[in-house]
Length: 101
Length: 390
Ligand code: SF4
Ligand code: SF4
Image (tube, rainbow over all chains, first blue to last red; front, side, top):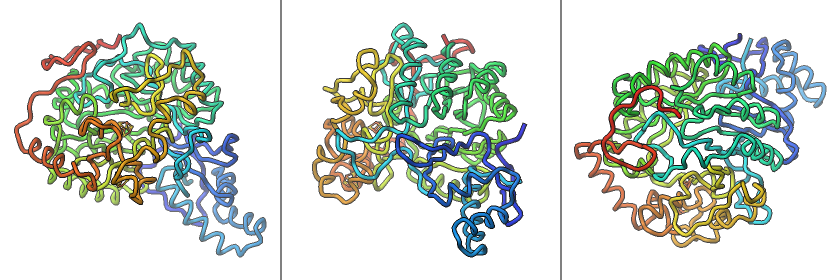
């Protein structure tokens, strides 16, 4: 069974394959009309871009692949998107919301 | 990304269009085999025969999910004292509530924990009294507690559940903070709550036995800051500072009637777990009124919702929608008037007086604990044996 708590800090790079651990739930909150992340003792409200990224964090796709997909979708330069994603995922990894493989 | 718990909008909700609470604190029972002298349960606890039934709790959870509650905190007392905890957790999962078990751990078996995980439990918060076994047992008046908790921590991880360790801090364990942090890392906790005691209920009664000195408190700030840096990406810290040494008070539950709804073992619905200490308040019960109706229209919820009820200095203070004037229960306990500014605030005319009380008490020898027990607050207690859970 996967240990949901990494004992070393996960460092996010372009080749990292991010995933959401089982106990982190990204879901649409119908009563408030927005997406939320449910985590231990926390609820976060990701913006649209964050939701697009997190929906692709399946432990299979790499950060670079996710960035390429989003660059196409939002018609934005891929290196800018990739840098933003790394920053965002690193922050979430440090909060235990994202794991890296 | 913003955190939205425990409150949804920074603006104070108007009574009729109050947004739904994010969290439901379900105090399933006041029964507990431990007797921690800082327990947040009221001095007068609910007896087992007044507790809501399984079906009643399940109905409360359904109502909560319908009104937009996202997270369920299963608390007590010791929630595992209830034999129907599995059924309650199962219902939470069915209706989509994120479930958090707040437990002292000592009544759990591996089989039971596994069953709870299978029923859909999302997270376990395990409390520890100290990293030193003998002292931990003395604080909780319970033999063998820490040994058992280490075992429980291991099971939680083996079963793939996320673990938070909760460590209430006070003058009788404060010097062990570095060891408590090490213990949490060793147990595999993803989060550690280092929580200085908040002085309500039993803790207020035991304040002189619990209050650290200002220097001791400052030391813990330093220790936590260093550990937070060292353990970045490994363990997240939540640090709760003691009110008496603070500059501004904590927002009470993210604002009264704003983020959290609390249901007691016997079904009373409170804006906060200590609200029963306030005089002249009437609390509705889930046995006679719908949860949503209580939340929106209940007298207790509207009493201190928003900022209209405030007096000076809060009324004209620009922090009033940040901390909502602090804690109503503390304002009442220390000043005799629940509408006063919480004396934890440095702008309160009573702040200096309470700071002095803390200074004095913390420098005197600690009096014996008044242990938490149902049926009164007798000052002597012998450590109880393992099976006092029912
Ligand atoms: S009134 Fe006080 S005890 Fe009650 S929730 Fe608010 S801060 Fe806590
Ligand atoms: S005066 Fe009232 S609103 Fe202002 S900081 Fe103090 S408690 Fe908060």
